[in-house]
Structures are given as C-alpha cells and as structure tokens.
Image 1: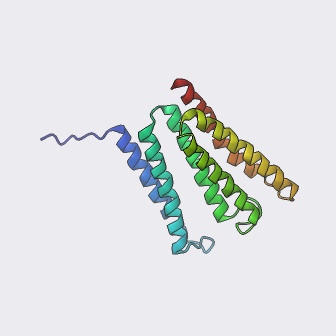
Image 2: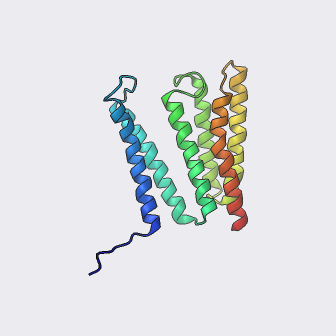
Image 3: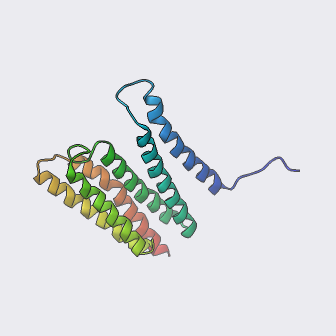
Length: 177
C-alpha cells in the first residue's frame, strides 16, 4: 500500500479556501478576548457564517460549472466584492452608519447584480456587462450620496476596484470561450 497519497491541486485550494473562511470567523472571537471594541453576539457569528458559507458554496458551484482561470478569477473578485460590500454595509454602513436607510440602496444594487447573473446563466459575457453595471451603480450611489452630504468617494472607489478587475477577467473569459 502506498502511503504517499497526493491530493489534486483543486482539493488543496478548496480546503484552503474553506479553512480561511473558518479562520475569518475566529478573528472577532479572538479579538473579543483582548478588546471591548469588538463585541459580536451569537447572531453576528451566525450571519457572518451564512455570508461566508453562501459565498463559498456559490464559488464551488461556479467553479464546477465553468473552467478557465480568467472566469474563476472574475468569479472570486465578483463574489469577494459582494461579500465585502455586504459585510461593510452591515458592520458600519457605507453612507453614514449601518442604520442609515440610504445603505439599503447598496443592498438593492447587490440584489440586482445577483438576479442579473442568474438571468444570464452566469455566462462570462453577461457577467462582464453586469460587472460594468455594478461599477455604474456604485458611481451613481456615490454621486447621490455626495449630493446628500456624505463624503464617500474613497469608499466608492474601493468598492469599485474588484468590479473593474472582475469585468476585465470576465471579458477575457468570454473571448476565450
């Protein structure tokens, strides 16, 4: 019997990604032991776990359905942008604080992105256009927020960067298909 068992690279990457998701949940737990600035409840951990789990399962689904490095890079960036925007919006809010109703517009934008992705059946060409649409939506939200007195252009630019890269990767994947 051969004791030198090698795992396929894809399994190592999957295990690493799920481990990182689990470790991400440990960060606030550890921080709570050292500072009162981090004060998560059980509900916070459940919500974060659902968000990380949903993101991971969606990545697994798309990686199994579509191959190609460009498509997968675009997927990671787009899912990361959705996760980060949701997490930031729930934690501290993007405009004002997390209780500001204007922040619901960011959730509406993300819901539109997800619905549009389903409608284009997650095809790279459609996802490239959706990524551009997300960028346009963020610019619009940033402009409206600025007109309401919020100075959120730095946050808007940070939120746009992964969408810009995702659009480029999905466009490349569409050309290679």
